[in-house]
Length: 589
Image (cartoon, rainbow, N blue to C red; front, side, top):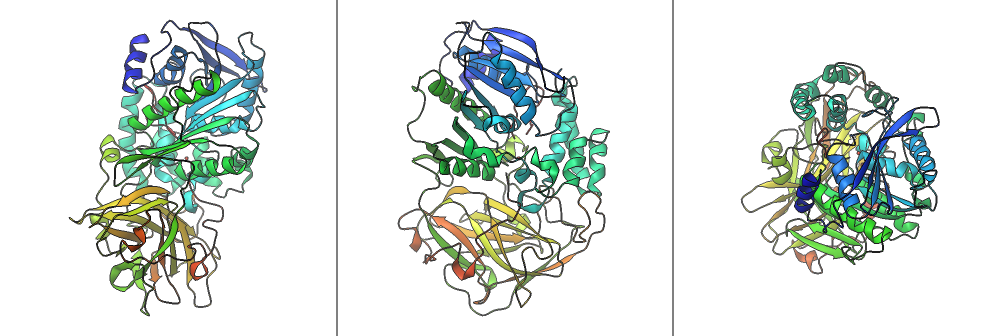
């Protein structure tokens, strides 16, 4: 164990351990309120005591997770209780995804009765382990002193149904991981099974895919398909955003610009700030399962927990916010997120142009979206990306050549354009169908023509949501993933508009049939307007002092209200869903 922790600690550039002479108590039995018994391992520092960190995981205790959040913590003076969630790795019962409140609070009550309980505790962990933290954060009481919530959010619904569309690739990947993680040679099995998922993404109905992927019906999969609305009673036990204002613990948040949970994580940050807290925030150039992101997460957690629980701030930065700025490839420290920015409207214009000047009278652009040949996803936040995809952003030119993708591109910039914050697209559209989607992506086009995605998002439309205007057009506001990116001089700004990104998002069949049983596919004729009465625009948060003249830009008085824009982005949906790095689950949420 010490050899593994020595290697991992060095790779993650962790501070030197206080001692490697730690002890582990295995398979502690923790009773739940309904009589189910969960198993936990207690990692004990050489001192025999120390501040306590609770880690609740569905991904195992004796694999890499035990090393990352047990051994590494204990070697640095923190005792850790690493518990297997219900129905996983020896714990009794059946996992009920994201419903971790009751078991988490029962575990806290059990800890208080142990003679080794120091009177207070912290929580830590990525992704699903972060959901388990938020599940108890508002009710654990003042004894909960600190949280290290990594690539996660307080509201799993907003991640699974980002923009109103089901996160097909992420969800099917996750149930496949969970189905294989406890078998021998789990990593090999998972890799093979993930490859077998690819042809399944195109199959309908979605309600059969769990059986085809895992060989059995999966309770969580069926529940998600049956409950696509966040108002469903099913989600009441799984959404914890309402409790953020009551959290008393100090919170550290780590995310990635291409992580599936980033929008939700930044909503958590804003809610904590509004409640008077000063959370720490780190955002790097990472996908959900990037090894570099996991290393940074563990390093940040160790520093944060030692500062809050051991009064050792020697490894903690002074600035509350640290972000990676794409395009420049540099890190930047800020007092808070987001920084002050001008909201600039870059208008869509005829001929595929994009620029700051108001559009002139012209007809709409149009395309046909065929769900039988759905517009594919190219890059973007997903649960599990290959190492190559996570390190080399894909070129979008082949995608942009499809007839079902519109592009609007600026002239080459005469100076750098710095964009940091919430990017949005306000589109005036008309569709032949009431049930349809619109997808927007901001791209950076280099002088050679390579088009690289910066951030994107999808919005699902349903009858009356949003309502059509008198002329039948619909104003659709799409909040893209937040970003920090500098477009260099000579580069161009591009906005893609389409109606899908499959299989990242489940395609919209156009028929209005229920999510889990839909099989009828109906093509949609889509129109995008860009005239003085319908000023479709890309809205950029520009932070560089002189960036307004990068392409002759004019600053809009207020991007949220310019041209009468709606101030709400997505009624009941907008995005954020976990990281795992383990010998048995290398790609889990």
